[in-house]
Image (cartoon, rainbow over the protein chains, first blue to last red):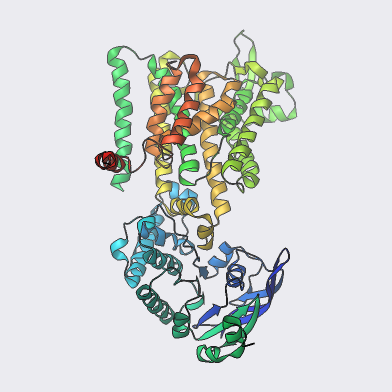
Length: 253
Length: 356
């Protein structure tokens, strides 16, 4: 079953055709990777899907709804949550608070209820806290729960960012270069985390440069170059694809 | 929960202690300035919520204060007697008008202060939504300039409008009647009760804001402050949250304007002045931005000193200098959260820095 369907999407920035007539599907429960050389338009594609940018033409269908005109907030409410290539934690909040923000869409206390400290918010806060600890336990970051996010090591910040996204209980988790800036040990750990997330029933779409990670964990890979799809296949087949090798390593001539 | 309300109790104790101190030293005339300080503090805590927690600056909050004060003053002093027509008599029958003698023994028929207050707050909400909607799309300096522009517009409008008293402002504003025979008024016989009424209101406002800070909305606002795009990606409608906080702080300012106008018995254009807005921002800044208690205690001290005339003719200059110094040397404010740990670090680091 298809969870996300990108259909003929194009985006132009001035004279640059960043994304050109791109189409691909993401099956429910799978891990799909989006790869390509630098400047291929991967992050633009991510921004288009997650609502930070809007395509010039084409459709993006998520869970049966067209979302190409929605804001990233509306998209998140529908169950698609992303992380950022350059980590975007809330720096002065603790790890626990960062993850609690992820529960926003699953709670409802508004300005008035908050100011009056209405009784229904007490139970809600309690549940937000419990769920957040559950997620921190899953990711092994409970010892850092009271630490200010900005003072964590880079690799841990990435894990917290994923934890914050998981707190939204997304149907689709979009990871923008989850292994960027991580050493080999941290990268392997990240691979295990992503596989575990899939086992929880969350569909994953990721952009990644680390080929070994991509080949190890993804079910399918889409390769883009200059904003166009040049291949879409299983990892092993992608490794043997002549066009992909040509784009990455150059021609023989 | 107890940790949240413990400082509230301590602050209430301080307010009582100040009153007792003036009682025993026979200086209860200070309570007048302290009561005015309370109403200004109401503006400060609301603005602290906007600047410190939601991360949005406003250099136009004196404008909202003036909208509340002026509207309430106008409605409670404008004589409707000569206009006895269909609408006025309808208002009269529904009991929202009051008749009272004016200063010269004539008959006055004006809007009841409660209705005037409600109208003033409602208009503030409308104006805040209309201004905040487009303006809060701006960030940083641009937002500061746009809100400054709003403040200047309000100032020039009250200064140039005849029925708002132009440069003289509006005077002879009646007291604001409350249940149990209490009245918000500057009469010296009601000095003590007004002192407690005003500070009671401030404490109520602080409790509401503290609750908000520690709620789901408070967390979302802190997230907007920290990384707006990430907050949006977490499903937080950032534009709406910023706007609601802006309106909330405008309502605090407007209510303070209404009540202080009834307390003082009038309002003048200086209350709408740009330097008032700068003063509010300076006090929030020195209090530690995201620190309601810091802002409140700084407001208590600085407003009191200013109202007692300790800064003399340099009143506005003092607040300008405070703002500059804070921005230069302590952008997180004097009373910020980690003040003591920072001080400890500075003290323990100094010897090393001295070494070659």
